Length: 133
Image (cartoon, rainbow, N blue to C red; front, side, top):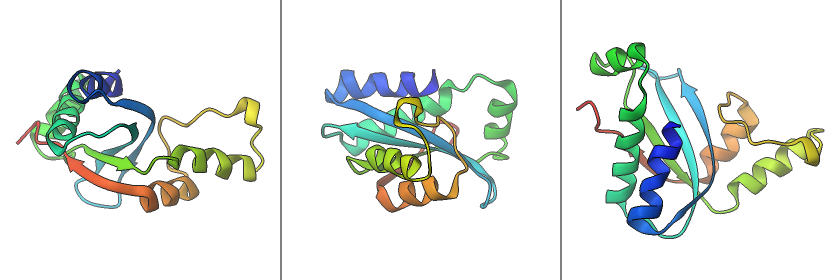
């Protein structure tokens, strides 16, 4: 739902398309925060990506999240744009580790170190939300 709201801006403002996505709860840094990884087809300006990131951050309706963001107990949402083909690499990674192609679905939230290494190495842009600034 949150990703859907943000990605609607891609279509309406930049005529771009969300190819695939996943997310990660980053707890290594303080305050912890959520990272959403997007693979996008099409050119999207920094202003539109910033708007997408703010829209997603503001779309979390859980009271605990809203309060935690307001008090900075949870850091700003981070949107990472990854290179085209990143999610194909992820598919190849899982198949190489025994997953069946017919059963594979991109995880929507992950803490898998191999997957995070692929995502980190493929990130080409990082945008932080200003929704609660």
